[in-house]
Image (cartoon, rainbow, N blue to C red; front, side, top):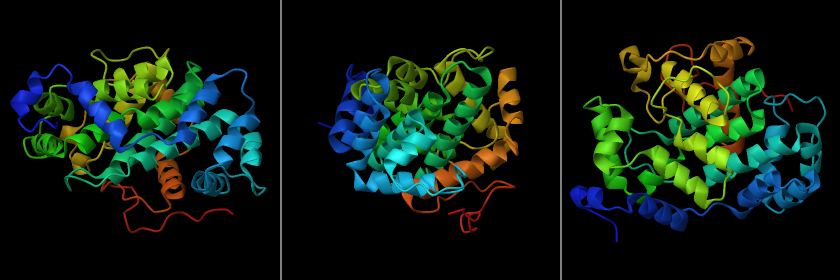
Length: 319
C-alpha cells in the first residue's frame, strides 16, 4: 500500500525497497537492454551476439541506425544494419546506446509537476554521460563507454521516486523551487532517503555491474573529488561540472548563478573539456542530437544564454 502520510512513510524501514519494487512493477527494464548488459559483462560473448539481440527489437534497431547515420558519429558511409553498427562503432558503444535508449523508454512517465521538466532531466543526464566519457578518455580511469552509461543513468532514482510517489515528489520540487532548498536536502526531508540510494538499489535489481551501482550511489560525494581514478569519481566530477554550468537535473531556474554549486573540480575535468573542440557547448549539442535521434523529437533545452532555444531548429544532419 502506498504511504500517503509523510510521517508514516519516514518511519518505514523499507522505503527504498518499496520505491524499487513499485518502479520495477510499473516500468520493467526492456529485455533487450537487460540482455545487452549481460552480454557486455560476459567475456565469452561475441559482438555479433549483441547485434542479434538488438536486431530482435525493431524500435531499438531504428533508433540505433538513425543515430549511427547522423552527424553525431559522422561516418561517411551509410550504416544499414545493426551488425555494421557494431563493427564500425564498437560493441560497447552500441551497448551504451541500447541501455540508454531502453531506460529512457522505460521512464517515459507523465510529469507530476511542471516545474520539473523531464526533457531537462534527460538533457542533464546525457550531457553528464558525454562529459563522463570525455573524462574517462582523458584519465584512462575507466572505459569511456562505461562512463557514458553510468553518466546517463546516475540520476535514475529521481524518476523512480517521481513515478512511485508523485505527491511526495511534487512536495520536494516545491521546496527546491519556492523555498530554494538544495534538491538533496529537500528529498531527504520529504522522502527520508536520497535518489542516489534509490538509484543504486534499482541498478542492483537490474543486475548492473557493481562499479556502475557504486557510481550511482556516490555521484554526490561527501568530500570534493580531487583525484579521478574510478567510475564513481568520473561521474561525480562530470555531474558537478554540469551543475556548475547551469545544466541542472530537471530545472531551468539555474540561470541564476547564485544557485549553482561552487565546489572545486578536479584539474583533470578542465583538461578533458579542453580536449573537446567547443568545450561544454559541443557536449550540449551532442546531447541534443543523441536525444533527438533516440526519442525521435527535439528535446526542450535550458533557458540559458548561448544555448539552443526549444523552438530553434537543430543543426543540419549528415545522412
